[in-house]
Length: 356
Ligand SMILES: Cc1cc2nc3c(=O)[nH]c(=O)nc-3n(C[C@H](O)[C@H](O)[C@H](O)COP(=O)(O)O)c2cc1C
Picture (tube, rainbow, N blue to C red):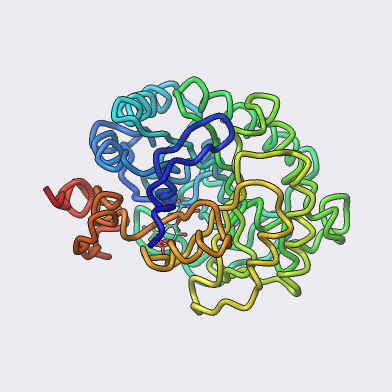
């Protein structure tokens, strides 16, 4: 039997103690200023035995928000809150990146400064409801960004990258998955622009490339990860040819020598998996992190077959702060309570029991 899952891994210049990554998970428990606080510190500290924690999606500016009570990474109070978290994780011997987020059309005027209209590459309304402090509200038609506004958002990514450094993170993950702003530019179902940011795959990737250029002025490439979700239909997303288009995007990432490529494989909504991820993984020259519905056995098989270098685990980490210990010792897992995933207090957050 393999022990690869529990062996160290060099992620660029960082030595991870094992190959299990905690996937980024929004828990909607930031304070009224969208700042992390002591409860969040306890949550991450409890999970520090993951080889790497990717902290929950965090908006890069007040305009980037899309849900209630999500943390930001733009104010001094937020930086101070995150600093306590990174210190706590480091004190336990762990490592932690932060996921940089701009929701774009997955938002609602009631969540945004001055009740402004959410923005997107094109004025295409998502199906479904935004989650707001006043309950669900139908998504509105977003406003298409001008190229000047795109430049402003790119500069917000750079500023957030700087703040992440001040907050003591080991690196950043650019959230280009799951139907948020960068993904809205990448996929042709949401990007119908006819300017330099839409049309061809090359132009649809331009915004992402500008963001990566900007954050790599702050961090070396090997401290910058990226998350993609080629066929995830979550948040009303679609693309005419995901495998072909993402093969292009991934090949373009190679010369950047990033920390990793993190892929949410398959479709979270339909549970289908049509794209050949092994072939995408083979296009990529660097570290590949596979995610979506992996358990210990699937993770070990993927590592054995060379399908992935690291495995990101989401929901099981919610319910099992000591997931690595439990996997290692073949212990039973606590079951996650979906009712406490988003928002609330310590219940379903920091009160899941450790095995010993
Ligand atoms: C409560 C919850 C919050 C999530 N928040 C994020 C997020 O902030 N950023 C992100 O990229 N994915 C997010 N996801 C997706 C997870 O990172 C992961 O891709 C998904 O749970 C599938 O992995 P799993 O089967 O190991 O749970 C979230 C998932 C859950 C269940």
